[in-house]
Image (cartoon, rainbow over all chains, first blue to last red):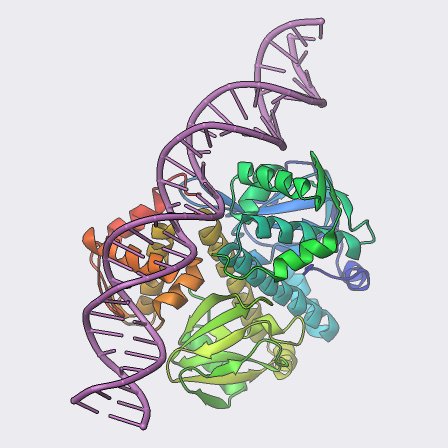
Length: 221
Length: 221
DNA sequence: CTGTCGAGTTGATAAAGGTCAACAACACTG
DNA sequence: CAGTGTTGTTGACCTTTATCAACTCGACAG
């Protein structure tokens, strides 16, 4: 369930708008409350988006990699609802939204792309809710790894051998678990011979079995 | 966080497209896998959307009431991703999506409305993830009741006195809890004198305190 | 080279919520 | 109007995951 534009789609958008911006690791593209002016296509790097509650709790709501588009949360209220933070030195392509709306009036293809990208985000969020509401810790971690794997594959990288860009705590926040639980689950999956985990480096040993572990498993919670 | 169009917005859409459809209680507007052709504005009644996993598990992802718009999950893949089911006899207004896209090219206001409605859904989903990932049972139930309350208020109904349209099981599925937990939490909130629960009828006794219980409370999970 | 800090792992224990089961209150059916 | 199915409540018990704490490993600073 990767969200975002294909290479072809991306280049189409590229021609219409432009302006790149470098974001250093740890820096934000935008923060909650910032005025919304643009959406952003990730050209290079890795981001998380994070929602914060009044009481200080915060939740990672998404990770974005090359080719994916973020910032659409800001459209409705003209104000961003979450923080978008680079997990490594990154580059985004800024797409001024009102220009995009104006141009998309003239280029129906572009309009349709935009709608699809937004809809894909809605679908992805629903899958996320399913995960948070109906899966247990181990299943969530497996789903997370398989999802990353698939997205790396779609970008031409190795599907079974990759590096995590985020900490255990960020994974935990994303999955609605504590970092200790994430760590234990990794260890457990490793003991079972399903994955190999060495700090941030992940190797999927038996992706097929991981997949069946997801689709089997009744009950849950 | 109500999603949907205001009266004025709704009537605008009304003039552009139309065709009402009655949906009896328990019937679906669309089901997962159905070809996507339209989005739907709720004119009357109450709906849930539900995602189903391969293994039979299912999760209620949203409730929709009068004035709210559903079906946008289908845009990206031209296929619906969830089931939309009426919780009472209802009526929706069908908005053929490709027509909408064509017309919105000529009516920029309409285009902006569409984008806002879609973005509102994204924001709402992120709030939902926050709830599922970071709140405990009691907080989730409180957030759910306050959200309903606010949406009834926005529609001119009593904010502190309303009837639930869904079962405990549907609430549980939506909140990532079991129906027993929902039931117990209702009983507990009643014992505390915060709400009054009689089957499906809810009366909020101390909405102010409920609100502080949400924004206070650190930790969570 | 030593000290400190952040990230990660692992263990012991506690708490939250799930599971199973019994039962009550209704609504619907024959 | 008795019988059955659905919905909701409550209790006893158990599983999962959180919490707290100790410890390792590197990276970086002085």
